[in-house]
Image (cartoon, helix red, strand yellow):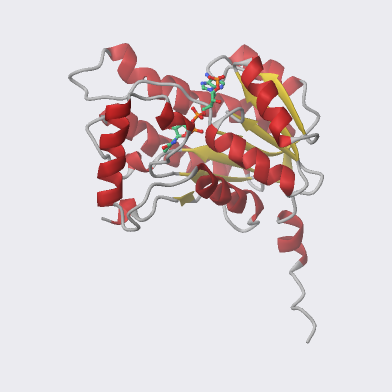
Length: 251
Ligand SMILES: NC(=O)c1ccc[n+]([C@@H]2O[C@H](COP(=O)([O-])OP(=O)(O)OC[C@H]3O[C@@H](n4cnc5c(N)ncnc54)[C@H](OP(=O)(O)O)[C@@H]3O)[C@@H](O)[C@H]2O)c1
């Protein structure tokens, strides 16, 4: 029996061969895992971040299809220069962010604002600067976090920031169509981000996550990269938030 033919539009959107995938935050963690997966699918990948040595090492690991450029997602001038050097952008993923998290009564106003400054406005300004170069059959994937839907600990500004990013994704999906815009909202991942945090905080958070989530395990960076690849390549998905979180937001 011959295989079922693929619908032409689905087939085209689903292919990353020869496409340019831009990963701001691609020098480590989830963004780097997406770089490996996109390169393996035949894409050219451009890694963005603030630290040249990290980016150069990451690009070397990904291979010949990877290049890198420095960019600070919180700086509009830096973002404009970054995108000015690119001929085209087929898919954009923005996992770059640095911020403080904690209870309202313990953070300074500046610390409380930091997720919005870096993670919300950083992604907003990145998409704004990328928009003229986005392929009409391409896509944007924004980074949120399951803490926006179900905070694991008191961190109200961080929770609100993630919820705001999910709203931003829906609004941009309307405005930028036919470019598709989606949001990935991961649960807790045993990866680079948590490896930088104090061991006691990490072990507490990991134990709580294993206990409270349906699948009783942490995510991997590759679990989340797999979800991002789906959002890049499913030509009928836009305005969606995908929760690769082991069922954490169900409970
Ligand atoms: N890991 C998790 O458990 C988890 C769960 C839910 C959501 N998230 C979200 O995922 C994102 C990052 O996660 P990750 O696990 O991949 O962490 P990561 O390994 O720390 O990756 C963040 C990357 O962003 C870059 N970056 C940070 N600030 C930047 C800036 N201002 N401009 C440009 N690049 C910047 C960093 O490189 P430089 O410092 O060299 O610039 C780094 O390579 C965050 O938005 C986080 O909230 C993570």
